[in-house]
Length: 260
Image (tube, rainbow, N blue to C red):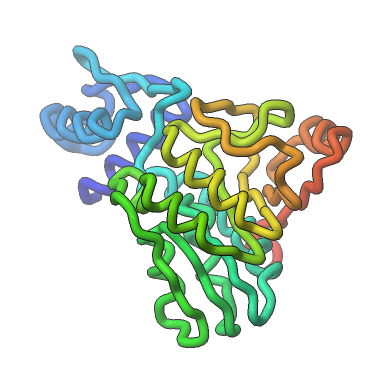
């Protein structure tokens, strides 16, 4: 196992267990304790864990956010299902916004080569649509965020303020049925707010693990979204509360079922 995959596996373990021990990880991955300490140091620099003598713990504060790579690996089946469902809403001739979240990253995989215009501030999302010649791609300028692998700054907001899109596909780190959608960093939240203002139809993409989580910067109330797409892992009680709140909740089936 290479270093990247090992760190992803360590992060998964932290998500499930909240704490890890260096010696146990060294034995599990058949590497030296020093190697594990280096892995933990990389994760700590991203702000998602705190190391201490002999181990590390997961940071779960409202301003803590893992890197794009770590988020993209987490809940992959759910994200692919949501991305496929979202792609079905795109029509010939649409102008759409694709957000910098990892769920949105996968939308491009399912977009047919229809004539459309895509606005995005996500560098990674371009990877999935750059070979589709009928799709015009407009990249928002701004300061590059290594954490989200996207442009996030005042110039990004200014750019979006001078445009309009038919549909905006927006992701969020957390969603509460009362408080709304939120992310750990203020600038990310402000960019999402700007996009929502210039969009005819606002579509929120959140897997079931995001429900009930609240982060530092709220970028939209529940009623602000025309459609909220999640996956079938969502529990019945949450579905009931969403319907009682009048939310247009769409539950995307997992792709492995569709393909069987």
